[in-house]
Image (cartoon, rainbow, N blue to C red; front, side, top):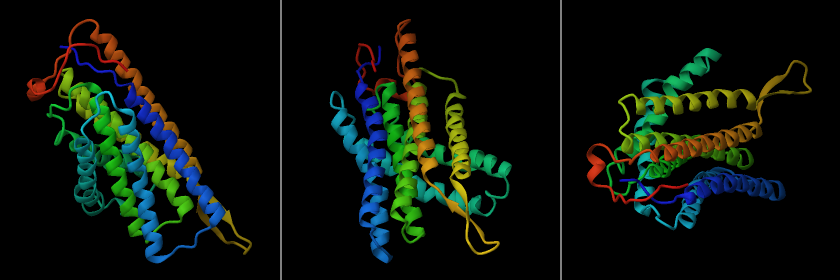
Length: 308
């Protein structure tokens, strides 16, 4: 049987999400510039937490206004995002901070930072997104086409990023709203798009009977992009500030290059997934595609052509 259903709505959702996040940054920056709110204490923490949650809410809103032809069940999408957030809080962060003690050595030198960001941080984070989908909806009848992997992978990435953002703003006692909203949106763009990439590999793994190395390859690619972005964004956002006092030099932070880089990364990753799926569909013309493994008998498959 062919896996069916036109899902142009998924791509509209992803593009709208990127544009919506950039608009969100613009609105917050305008408010900060015009009003210059002076928040501190509990008020600053609450405002920062709201900023951290809004991008995930925007994604859900865009998805459910666009994906009307065959929408994924709300409880499944929200459940995957929640599970990814739970894995981030209960497993991912304790592993990185408590077991691997990443903060104590990650900035030692450039090579350590790059390799540590890929092999430790990136690998743990992308594996947690994989688990969020694999342990929840992967064998469900609702995961019935390749594109569902992109949807659920995106949800896992956004859930993971949301928890990391909330954890960061609470740990720091709130963030400067102008700078903080950019950091929050960058995380959502990067984690969401890389979650979609992991989801693409999951979709192929389920329906195309891929070899045992397929998913490790997908996680490794996502982890490599994750780590390289983490290192490069740190390099391009660092700036030197010189003060009038003789000999006083300090490091500053300019978040805008990270936003540009995160937007470019999200656009490139989503474009790559789009063209990979188009290539898959062309390959489908040579013969039918069947679900593999335990899920083959449980999906609500239908004859037809899966389109973009």
